[in-house]
Length: 112
Image (cartoon, rainbow, N blue to C red; front, side, top):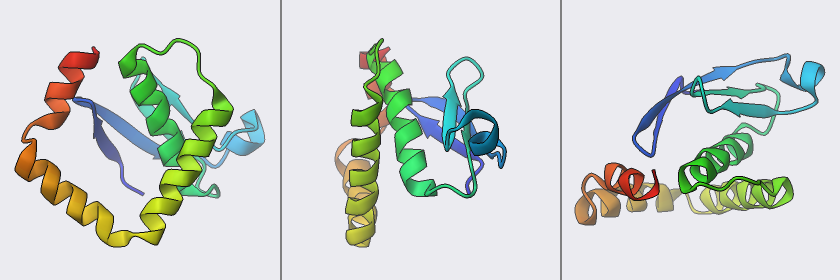
C-alpha cells in the first residue's frame, strides 16, 4: 500500500487500519480535516481507495451530501475498468502529462 497521495493539489496520508471493519463497520474512511485516508488491509483495497478518492473529489467539487451507493458503485466500476485494462493507466498518465501539464493544480483552482 502506498503511504501518500496527491489529490487535487493536496497531500493525503494513506494508512492501513485493521480495526476499521471491527470497530466501525467500514472498509475505509477519509478525514478531510487531517487529510488522512484509512483503509482496512482486509478490504478490496483498490475499490476501497477509489471509494475514498471519490469522497475527496466530491469535497473538492463542493458536494455536500454524498450518495454512498453511487460512490460505491463508481468505485467498483473504476476498479474493474483498471483491472481489465492495465495499459489504460500508463496511457492516461502519458497523455495527461503531454496534453495537460500541471492539470491537477489547474483543476484544484477551479474546484476550490
